[in-house]
Image (cartoon, rainbow, N blue to C red):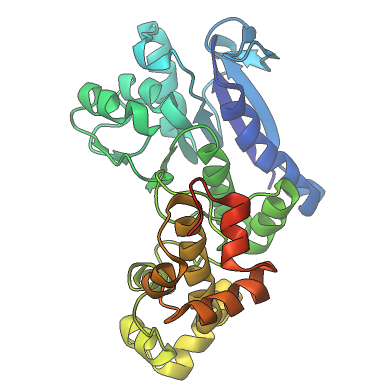
Length: 323
């Protein structure tokens, strides 16, 4: 059955909040049967033609009072002026009705403010751009705002952090609809990672083999990321999952496409990469912090996986003096 994705836009909207998520679903159509492809549209809450914050012009498919209220997936884009903007009560009434009837609804970046003022965030857990989190929490006092999340799902409600995080959320939504293979193919087409680790404060990772967030395997992956100094043998991870070693190993590969040991190695490389980029700590210290044991083992892992040594990686991508 064909699915629709509708993006709510307005005067001053952030262009990437529109194009990023919609391009995910547009690229997905390359990998779907004709009857399964997404139909994309934009609905303006101002005039049909709006000017984005970067001066681009967007001609919306329709305007809100002509759009009806029957939507499959309805997302509200964000924009620099949206936290301060108040809309007509009739617009909020339309948005409430449209979201409550949608299969999924949500917001990109600070589009959450429009949902909040429509009364759609009460009792919910959401995220938004880190710089707007306090303001959203002040307006929506019955909402839990998690400022350091890339995206958050609360039942049918989906919200993302700022700007490019809308792509992360769209890939997550795509994965829910059509599975990991389609989402990974789209991520490769767009040259983005499948799923970023951590929160908004971290850079995009080298990792790309994450299990669905609610699964036991994802719980083990989170354990790995927070215990990198430890040995992290398969037997230890199986205990975390409360599974037999053989059953855990099979379940891990089934969920992620890689063996547990490979995931641990990738996690260590990713953590070391971030430290090499952001800090001036000695390489031997980073090797210890990330669980390699010594600088020689870390060097071998970097050369095998990235094709260059930690020292050379720091020279290319580091922000400070090399050490």
